[in-house]
Image (cartoon, rainbow, N blue to C red):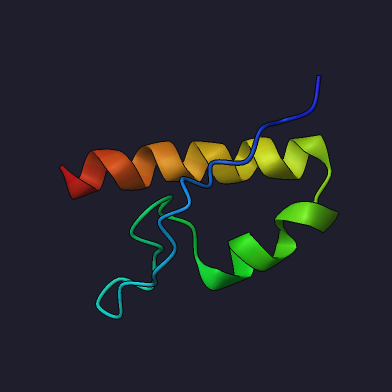
Amino acid sequence: MAVPSPCTNICSIDPATGYCIGCLRTVEEIAGWGSSDDDGKRAVLERLKRRALRKD
């Protein structure tokens, strides 16, 4: 099964953090998503979980 994108269609980079306000990815993570293998995508998703916890 393919790893789903975390995109929420709320695409705007927060200049203070460098993260998308919708999905918390960096510009580099967003740009590289399509060419990443499933392990790379899972690694990004794990980083997003940690980012979300720090944001709350």
